[in-house]
Structure formats: structure tokens, C-alpha cells
Image (cartoon, rainbow, N blue to C red; front, side, top):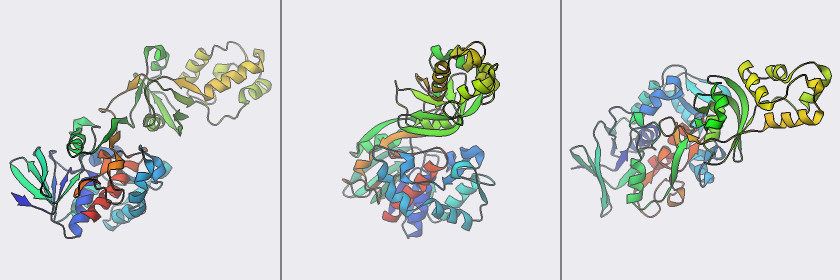
Length: 388
């Protein structure tokens, strides 16, 4: 039996970062994972370059039953703090659209940095976690054939998204065992599937265009992509975190066109048809499909203004009714997880069980697309690392 000050379950971003913070405070740390290598999601993220944070990472860009829960950790360890760490390790980076920061080189540089920061911590991989228990103020973990004990345990095993990398719902099972409640987990940042009655749009597979996609009260202006199963692209992935079954997703196909643009075009070019009018704003195949759906034959000059106004409104508020998502297999992250009302926002500790902490994707805090979820991993890992 081996004794440590803290045992961290999960060698992903949150777990490794927490290990580094705790080890640098002189704590004896063990990081345990069933995966054969650390930071597997980091390695594949951002096309292999890791979108490691976002300059706009504030609490209001996270989905949660209590979004303000993330405010404390994000405020005390912010994006600029992680950027400073990246620069101290000599990792070159660049900013892309919407505040997204990427490595110039490889995502493996971030994993190497986290391992270097966690120097002194024991990192044990490639063995299953067979049992976790708690008695007399101590946590006991059986990892492979070893038994480890510590007064502090950090659950950092993430959610069930991307199961091909070994992701499971283990964190949720463990949290429930220790009396923590869950917010129902569901796939997030995930493509949406469409029912057969939207089959026309499946013929547009591969077509992308910039739109404003809305689900609930959330709106995102980025690219949408038609697929053979439904809708994808950054705007749709963002909206998917807010979408619920039986609710529509609304698309504004012409976000740069002001009200009355078709009637103005009618007066300026009365002989133009709707297909050609849409072609000035949209990819050809999409313009053709929308024009066919809108059933506006002939020249604009022959259409009543009221008809053109209705068409404008339809284009700016086209409703799709998804019948589902492509599931955890294609989801980048998970919405839901361990309920925040059972956790201390400053330490990520369970309120009713001293020594138990939950961080990263396992918690009901899910960021937007574009580096927000990695920043939550760093911020929540830092908060727990300071407390264990």
C-alpha cells in the first residue's frame, strides 16, 4: 500500500494541470489513468495544434445549470495566466478567429509542458481503476494490482465524449457513489441530425456558408455545414450545446442582408430571379435548393412586395427540427455532469465530503467551441491544486 497526499484520477488536461500545481506546493501526488498515455484529447485537439485557450474565456460563455459557478476559478486563473505559462516553456502560439489560441507546432508540446510542470508527481498509466473507497478520512484506490491511499482525491476523468479515446462515464458513477448529484449528461459541440422530411438538404452534403444559428436564447455567427446526416460546422456545434429535443434550430442564411433587401433588388433589377438573387449571397447549390423550397418562380419584378418580405423573413429565420445528434462518439465535450450545487466554487471540493474534489469536464460546466473547455480544465485544476 502506497500513501500520498493526493490521488488524481485522470491524466487529461485538468488532472495533469492539477497535479503540477499540487506537486509544486510540495504535495505527494499520484495521477492514475487506464489510458496508455497522458493527454490523449489534447493530442488530437485543434487539428493536432491544440486550441489551448481563448482570450474571451469568461463565465458567461459556459453552459451550466449555474453558469456563475465558473466565475471564481476562471477569475483566479485566467487565459492570460496559461498563456504566460506556455510562453515560459518557449511554446510558440498564434491567435485565430474569435480569440482562439493555438500552438504554432504540435499539441504534444502542451502535453510535454504539463508533464514538466508535474515533475515530482507519480504518473501511473495503462491499468484500470478497480475500486475507490473512503473510510476514516482516507481515500483508497486500487489501480491495477496496486493500492494507494490519500486524504484527498480528485476526480478528473472527464465525460463520455469521444469514447474511442477511452472516455467513459466513470466520473459520474464515482460521484454518485460519494453522494454527489448529477445534471443529466448529453452530447455537446456535436453535429445535429435531420429527419427524412429535410432530405432535400442532404443533397447539399459538403456545402458550407456563414450563418447565424440560434438555439434557445443563444446565437452564434460562424460557418454551418450540410452533411449527409444533417447539420454541422462551428455555428451548429455551438448551438448544439443549447439545443434540446423537440426544439427547433433557427438559421439566418443572409446575416449581412438588411430588412427590405429583396424589394430593393426588385426595383433595381426587376428581371432577376430569386435563384440569382440568392446566388449573390450564398453558394450556388444552396441558393438553388433554397429557391426551390421558397417556390418563387419568375422574375422579382412580378412578385408582390409582401411576398418578397415573407421570403426575406423565411431566409432570416429558417427553422430546422433536428431529430437528434450524432452522439457522444462525435461530441467534442459533454453538457451536464456533476452538479455544481454540491461543490465549492473556490476549491472544487465536495461540500459534504472533505478531501473529495471534481474538476474539468466531469463537472456541469461546458464551454463554447474554441478553447473554452481547455481553459476550464486549467482553471478548475488550478483551484483544486491550490486546495488539496
